[in-house]
Image (cartoon, rainbow, N blue to C red; front, side, top):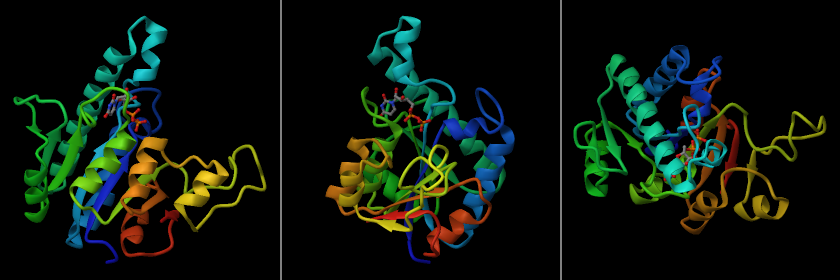
Length: 234
Ligand code: UDP
């Protein structure tokens, strides 16, 4: 295995699967199966899951709710997804802990860095819910920050596209996928990998990012084996 400790970022939006809203059980099941494969290889796995399938802070103004309130709503949405994912992973016999950026003692543990690392060392999958716990951030920035804090080897951004393209492949038939690209080139070419806060955190801390298609069975395990899947940014 190329990596020992990974931070997997799963988008909330992808959790909708074929639905228009909420959580598609088939999608959850697929995530659990893919994560099981890497766990079986002895990897230490931490996960950040988004909340876009339920609520995003930027939507809040359209319904007369201010941005900060909306962001907290978004953070709570990530906890709902994290709890669903936790159950799916446990149904597959994996041991998990959910740690939240906002204290909610009856539901999960608060995020404590040393404790998170200890869970990982004991083979538990740690899911980070409620983002960083602050408005005006995203779950991508949460993924970068937590990955740095727990000293993960890599951020794996599991999406519905199979990597970073030179242009939008849905609009430009000449768009090509990069197998590898530097942080600097991503800036220069104005490519969209993560929001800038998340991206800069990785660059400044020499933390590589791999963008890959999480929906293709076997992709996650192949990424951690070091096979050429998706796009490596380093
Ligand atoms: N959010 C936040 N602070 C954080 C993480 C998330 O305010 O540290 C809010 C923000 O409103 C965001 C929402 O939670 O829109 C859901 O997360 P995100 O949009 O990143 O989810 P994804 O796009 O991955 O589904």
